Every structure is written in structure tokens, then in C-alpha cells.
Amino acid sequence: MDLISELGPLAFGSRLKRLSDMVMKGGQEVYRHYGVDFEPKWFTLFYFLVQREEAGIMEIAENLKVTHPAIIQTAKELEKKGLITSKKCAEDARKRNLQISKKGKELLPTLQKIWEEIRLMNKEIIDKQEHNLLSAIKEMEDTWLEKSYLQRFIEFHGTTAK
Amino acid sequence: MDLISELGPLAFGSRLKRLSDMVMKGGQEVYRHYGVDFEPKWFTLFYFLVQREEAGIMEIAENLKVTHPAIIQTAKELEKKGLITSKKCAEDARKRNLQISKKGKELLPTLQKIWEEIRLMNKEIIDKQEHNLLSAIKEMEDTWLEKSYLQRFIEFHGTTAK
DNA sequence: CATTTTTATGTAATCAATTACGTAAGTAGT
DNA sequence: ACTACTTACGTAATTGATTACATAAAAATG
Image (cartoon, rainbow over the protein chains, first blue to last red):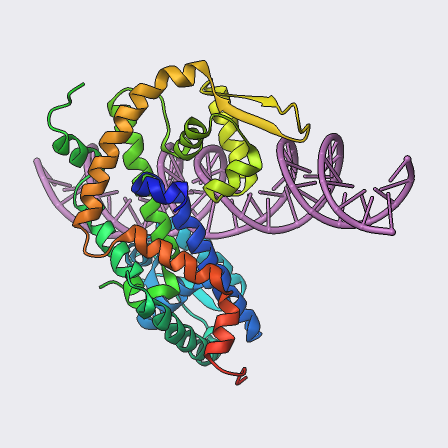
């Protein structure tokens, strides 16, 4: 048990980040292993567009639970790679809709094969864990969203015993 | 169940990051609530120095499981705030040892009171969860560190059925 | 003791997200 | 139709970490 583990929730920020980086790097290696020019960080956006055919920036951001500048940045990379395209929305001139490009659709079967393999392996890893990380994250997120930390804190410790 | 949750491990990177940001922000609010000039991101380093009295950059980095530039950066902030000091190590001229300053020691009792309250509340939150996030993280880290993802991937899927 | 290797630190550039801010287009109330 | 508000998007700056690289000191090797 290292220091951070002992401290528990006081300090898991960097731990979470580090773990996420490791996961990303693992994914990156797999794409490279198959000689496919694709990045793990593109996955959620690309996959979302595969399902949804066409969607605006804000809608995507909300669904993927990131901010809209994050989507814009990732979309820029994917457009540069020619994997997605974008066009002004006809009905609402404020909106710019993203969609998978022809090239993106051509790459899709290859990606899907890789994703399925990754999915299978990750499932195996997750199922072996005694504690399910995904469920734990979901639960913690819900707890946090439900009520602000400070609010909870004040209630928990009664009136501020300054 | 949103998209990312369905995708499971393929995409929890940004989720983890976001959660960690929420936790940090919560901590920040608590310090502010008590009118204390202290940041959650300083905690691990500061706390480590409280326990260890004096330590070099690398030693701290290894214990806190972050890279040494991260320690240097945080140490710079803490030195600027006057909460820690540093001095060249007499025995080993390569090393620069960090330690809590007088001002840091004066602030300590206040911080400890706050930490204890945070710890209690976090324990309550964690204990209420069905899935223990900390244990899950630990377990996942161990799995990842044990063997590289690509290595595991290749073994899992047999010889590359390119 | 000279040479090579390793260790400790520091700096710069990068990364992937964020927040803050600005603009343009739609929507509602009057 | 005018004004105020809200929504969608874009850009810039910031954050908190990383990797890559450089230097100096210590340790190991011959």
C-alpha cells in the first residue's frame, strides 16, 4: 500500500489520469500492430458518428460528456485525416454537422474487427477484476453529480463549526 | 447507459479525467470554504514531506508515482507560497532536498483538521458505493503493470491472424 | 585514475483536456 | 418588428500532466 492508496480519495486524481494514459497507449499499440492509422482518442467521436450518421458539435459533446472545444479539436484531426467531413446545417445556420467520410466508411470494417478484439480482451480483463472499475466510476460520477461536494461537505459536518 | 459506458474500457480515459477534475474542484471549494490558501494538487507532495521531513525530487516522484518534472513544478508553487523550502544535499551534490517550511508547519494543524474532515466524508461516500473505486483502480493498475497491453493482446488473440 | 554508465535534476515542448470569452443565429416576449 | 435571452460554434489561454532532451555528479569498471 503506497502513500496515495492510503490517502484514498484525497488524492486519486493523478492515479486516474495515469491509468487512462496507459489504456490509451495500449490502444495505440494495437492499432499500430495492425498497421492502421487510427488513434484511441478519436474513437468515441468516430464511433458516435458511425451510430448517428450525422450530428452537430454540441450534441456530440453532450453525449460524449466532454466540452465542445474538445470535439472541435478532435474533429479537426479527423477531418485532416479525411475520416470525417462536415457541412453547415441547412435548417439551423448555427450548426455544423459532422459525418463519416467515404474514406472513413472504407476503413470502418477494419476498425470494427480491431474494436471487437479489443472489446473481447477488455471484457476478459474487467470480468477478472474483483472490483468492476466501470461500475465504480459510474457510481462515483452519479454521486458527485447528484450534489456538489461542498454542499455535501457542509451537510455532513453540520453547521460550519468554524 | 450512455455511449461511453456501453463501450466500456475502450473509452474511459476522458471519464476518469473528468471525475478527477470534479474531485479536485470539490477539494478546492472546501479549502476556500475555510479560507485557507491551499490547493488540492499540492496535497500529495506536501503530505509526503510532512511524513518524511526531508526528501529528494526523484524519491518523491517515485513514491507519489508521478514523473519528476511534475514534482519540480508543484514544488515551485509551494516554494513560492513559502510552504516548503529546499536546499542542496550535503552528501550528494546532485540532490536537492525539499522540506516543509516554518510557515508550512504553522499551517499544518489547520490543514490537518480539514483533511480529517475530508477523509471522513470521503470514507462515507466510498463505503456507500457498491463498487469500490479505489480498489478497482488499484486492481486495474496492477493488471496493466504486470504485462504490456500489446503483449497481452497478442497472447489473447493467438498468433497475429493478420 | 581514466572512462563509462547511471542517477538526480532541470528545461522545453507537447498533449488532451479544460475555462473564458466572443460572435452569429435562432427564439420568446412585448 | 424590437429587444432580450439562449444556443451553437469558434478561438485563445490555461492546466496539469507527460515525453524528450541536456547537464552535472556519483558510482562502477578496467
